[in-house]
Length: 157
Image 1: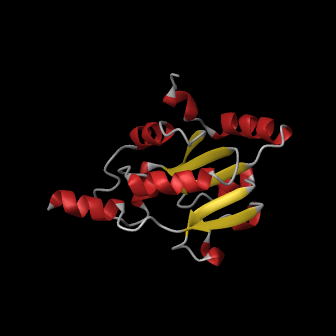
Image 2: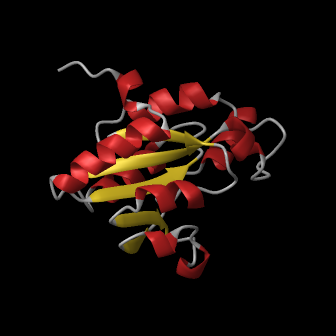
Image 3: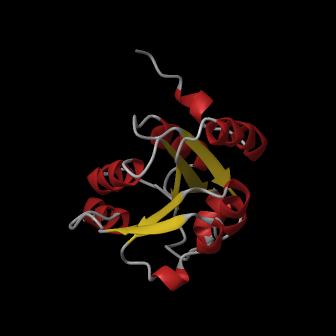
């Protein structure tokens, strides 16, 4: 089976139509977000856990400007938003990737109104942006030993 990863990366208008279709079919929509700068096993396992909460997993991907605003370093993100989006879209558990420009995905979550909003357990539930627009919030454990920042430090030696 061939997958066109580019078709899984879409804008908000196209996503809205798809979400409406899934809602009419009564399918459970899951949302999570992140920078996904350098994909690693921790990302994959976290996304697999998130996908298990429903039929469709939507990823909100921080734009380059949004990622820079997070203060992870002057050279981050390492990869451009278009490249990061395509790589995440290439994962079988991901249905859609949408890039957002704001510092947080709050407005995107408000528009999607996912059935399940998934974040890492390192986030206190009362600090999870957009939680009031989701059916429920699920916090999942981080995969120990995997982080992009640690990986970048290791590469730099």
